[in-house]
Length: 156
Picture 1 (cartoon, rainbow, N blue to C red):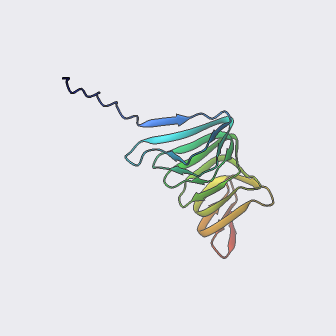
Picture 2 (cartoon, one colour):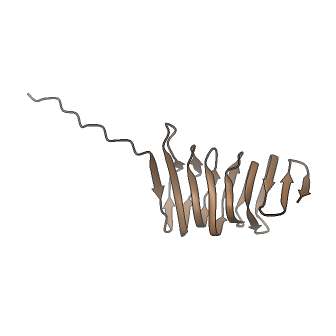
Picture 3 (cartoon, helix red, strand yellow):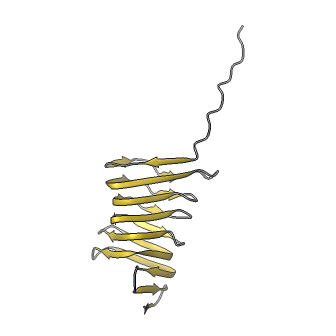
């Protein structure tokens, strides 16, 4: 004998945040929910590290300043740097206007692949790699570099 009992469904959380203080993810990180939720990695001078890529859903973001040791597919999310910026030791894959803010430093294993816009002050190690797969706008302030797959043009 017994009776059927069902636990009520928990309300779906529409926003999740990760505040790494040197955290490491051993699995692929999906920021957001394909059904509409968003996620944010909030760097406050810390380091986010993952052996597998980070993929962003609509409205999701990596924000703040610190270090990212992971490949990141921006998709319809964004990377918003603040203060001293982000040191990127993985490859950013972007095809939109999803990277903006203060500064981005590409470390020796870091870089940017894709199109769209990376509207930040940019520095990088000699081995950092930037690959334009189409029209790509890099930089901030008065000078921007417009890159296409085969040429570089400078505009002010």
